[in-house]
Image (cartoon, rainbow, N blue to C red; front, side, top):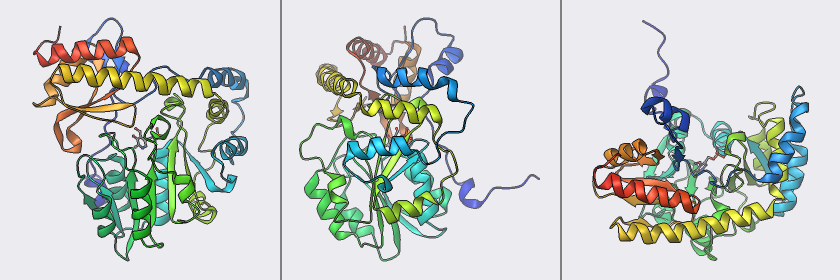
Length: 367
Ligand SMILES: Cc1ncc(COP(=O)(O)O)c(C=O)c1O
């Protein structure tokens, strides 16, 4: 008999990330270039300014990083138009989710989250031993009315992902405001906007603007997506200074690495890279919608850098065949979507390869 973990830990199904390229190469013995369109990374790579900052910073890595992320915080605060004490940095936005849980949710507390939404919220709730109400999506989108109704006087946090992952759908300012007005001030509201910089819907909420009126709101964003720095693991939360001060208490020292801080600072100033990434993504989505339609594969219009498609059959064999063809996409069976796949939008040649692989896989071919 070995020690048994806590009951809530026993119940956790671990997060399954997109398959790394080298793992697929090893497992399948594939030669040639493998294309990963499974984790919504930036297909253009990192910001060149961030790369230059990394090179410069290399000789300093014998020193601990700045624990307060002072310069990064100052740069980002200026960029966002907020105060530095409204920011908390994490080892990716996922770490900020963990901080929120640690500082606000005790075992048995109630949280509200959406079904078919970023699965880390359901996992984090389990880890915290929270009682979670999981609200189904409506038309692939958060059902904010139903989520507000699920909040009661004892609800500690509501998690809302906008644009939603894996569906790519987004709600607008009007819905955001109406929702926030319905949630009691005693309940924390998390707006996860990991894909914010890709959004082109002018109705998308000005969440930072909403902070003044709603001190119970925290907005999450990340350097993993449009800034192309997923490997450096930096995400952040923006909120009322008192709320941020509470969350900062549970942060471990030096949670954001020295090189990560330098690269993110530089990336914020790389407007060209961000603008180009947006353009390539918008053009890529347009191309892919048309190709998916031609293949008879329904696609959900996306505000992110990924698209949810419906293969109309068990998507696992399609995923495996595509993988055999050297294209890694993301099955979403664990989101209760057994026939769907989530694909990251790539560069034009990558998108062509994605479509060719999907076409072959749907025809039952893996060569
Ligand atoms: C909605 C959402 N939130 C957060 C994250 C995690 O971001 P990070 O890499 O900053 O931890 C992701 C990553 O896929 C995401 O899709």
